[in-house]
Amino acid sequence: MKRFFVLLAALFCLGSAAFGQEIVTAEQFFAKVSDRYASINDYESVIQINSGGQLMSGDLWFKTPQLMRIDFRQPPEQVIVFDGQRLIVYIPQYKAVLQQETGSDNLGAGAATLASREGLAMMKRNYSIAWESSPQAVPLDPGSTEMVQRLVLTRKSATEGFKSIKLSITPETLLFRRVEGWTVANEKISFDFTQTKLNQNIPTSRFLYDAPASANVYNNFLFQ
Image 1 (cartoon, rainbow, N blue to C red):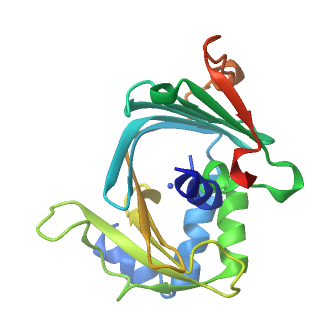
Image 2 (cartoon, rainbow, N blue to C red):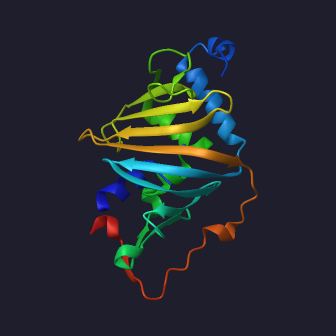
């Protein structure tokens, strides 16, 4: 459980043939995606997370610069909230609230800011960017009619939590459809984003969370 949330923190809480031909390099395409996310103030999405075959799904809200919340349907009633400084995880199965002050270490911010200009800039600094095969759109999954353009990012430094990241991007919207990351142990975690709605004027109050009074609170859980 702790390892999963470390991975989530390190990472988590995101065209036409003519367009594909226009973008010559992976770096140019990545810059287009960065510009697209720079225009987004907030969004909501249905998210599915697959970590080592363990499936989780729920509703995700994000607001710039670093506010994120996921209300899970699976596992039921589980909640993850990040406010830019503190990561909160409520696990109803154990009636436990896990809290982590991230501070300057920025743990937890990875998932919250990945789908932002800052998050994409971080990836550009710390990862080499290339097409998986070519700029041409490919099926999201074998046999799927949903088409994506796919980038592969390879870390430049061993300090990064993921040795490689694969981004599947919807050509028409330039939004993340799927993000997949591989750890040094070759463990894979993936995030699927669907039904994404942009610039919904999500109130800041959405990211406030009051845990049940009966829950036990565990602080600094990532380091214990």
